[in-house]
Amino acid sequence: MLLWTLSAGAQESQCPGENAPPPAVLDVDLAALKTSLAALKDTQGRDIWKNTPETDQALEEIFKSTPRKTKLEQFFQLLYAIQKNVDDAMMPVTVQPPKITDVLLTAKVFTEPWFPQHITSVELKRTDTGRPPLYKVQFGQSEVRFPINQGRGFSSWDQGMCQIAKELVFYPGFSFRIRNARNSKNLVVDDFDKVEIFGQFGTRKIFSIDLSYVELEKVEFIAGTDQGKVKAKVAQREFETNKHSALFRFIGTMIPNTSKQRIDW
Image (cartoon, rainbow, N blue to C red; front, side, top):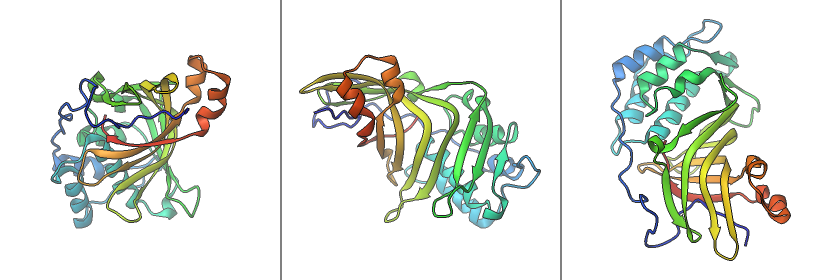
């Protein structure tokens, strides 16, 4: 009874904008991107990327595939390609502006070009030999809010109300791991920390519950689509910002939810 969701469960949409066309995917100059990547060095002056036929093919798949990948998937696919080019013996590696900023801007993975300017460093390190390496992103501010879909957000109708994801909220030390799915061509990004989704969520079913902040845990990009599986739970900030019953405060952060929906930013 306390479950909330971001997923679209109704057969007929009652949520304005749910079926609106997806955001445009920006064309990328691959020659310019390869130049930016070749110039990418860590804080010790070591090369992070080497242009090879294999990396050329990887970039073609990320930025020129049909159907086109969303900007959000391109972002994580690019980081995954960089990750595969870094040997364990090099880790940890840390890259800083302007080199990493140039790569992200040239890749055009953000509709809001100001966002990469807030990044002060990106670190890739091995924390557990049995798991993929960990990416950690630092910001110059205590909080950076990224408007989803250029401020329009993404919406879906479920649980008797319109669920709207409006902003991504990042905090310094934002981290995640990237890997391929075990039994498909999907890309999985999980073990998220210090990132939340701000918006309008909740339920109008047995109970009436309104939520503003949920904590992102996992995203699986479904290959060949703009859809993905999103796992999230109620964020601690929700209880610090809005009033909820003692029971929901106790159970809310313990119940993750997985939904299938359009994924982009």
